[in-house]
Image 1 (cartoon, rainbow, N blue to C red):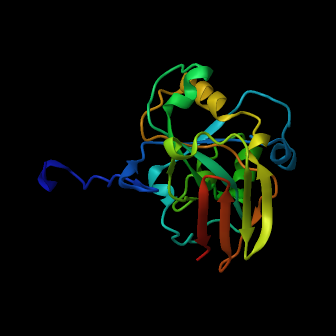
Image 2 (image 1 turned 180 degrees about the vertical axis):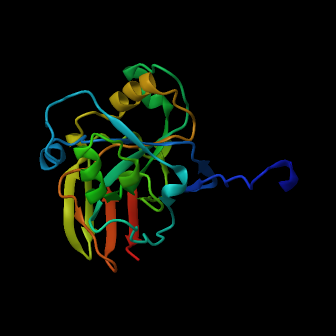
Length: 231
């Protein structure tokens, strides 16, 4: 098809680099799990017990790849970082059984769920959706994907985020309330998962505000790193 076949130019496919592979991972959707570490649930005023998971979405073009800058967004004076392991779906499906869920994982990455916290707090007070706080431009810095075929399926290991060299968040993947197979199984009962979906699995406690000029550095054991400078 040519440009004349479209009434407007189509958006480009968002492609994430894969470590050790020339081909790239095309992103379909981005799902995010809310309050999936007990300590973070407490610091956000939620229940740390094992309640049913809940989800929100970001958009593929919210990703910031390759260590690019995170421009401080408009309409907010309180923007927070949330470090998360990201699950890259390689095979889709509906109602996926827990014991088969890991067969649907292509790989893993590490990302930062940037949040306009002041806008989110307003949404919560009015019982409104969170999209304006979560799905804004550049709100998902992310590192390269590493294949499950190369590292297996991490269910424990350190995850942390530093700002200007100071540790702000620190946890372990074994602290996830809902584990990777359970996340995939539950989510596939709500949506038909597709190859190319990304799932941000939740953040440890310690979330906090950033300022222009800050450098954010994240790490997840066996998975990799992510870096972004607040512009």
